[in-house]
Image (cartoon, rainbow, N blue to C red):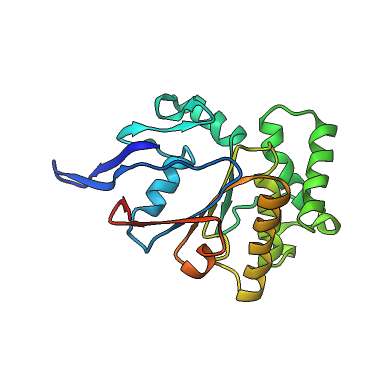
Length: 218
């Protein structure tokens, strides 16, 4: 990312700058923590990294692909194939089993039924949820839901995992298990992870930490 700005107009002609000239390079296989308080601009930056929103100006390249110039259809494809998302509130589909939830990104990518089912089972096994593959989200604990969400994020072998406060809705013990799983995925699967958090304690476990304050990287 080079010279990234994001501005909004809030009922007046005057711009409100949320992200202000951010330069950021994330290296392959890196486990990067982005730390910031509420209102710091970290959520806006996360949305830009995740191709959920576009910057007002600046350049964003992902594996050589110019995300900053992509149209809406291209952004949707980038989100499904290049970026794995893990959210604080899991965002699982309530009426689908754990297995079906993990399969869905592969279905959207056009993968065949047997291949995506085999891949989903493999990923659920990786996160320790194979034995609960037929359970629906309301039959799972918070930690189990998050493990399913992590498996889903890996479905299309993305270039980067984007984890937004993934332990925020969990108790400390369960959060510890989820954090250990991210370390395993980074170490053993070689996945690049961008970890958004307000907790410096968790951030210090990662390989690199940056702090965002008032829309600027400190």
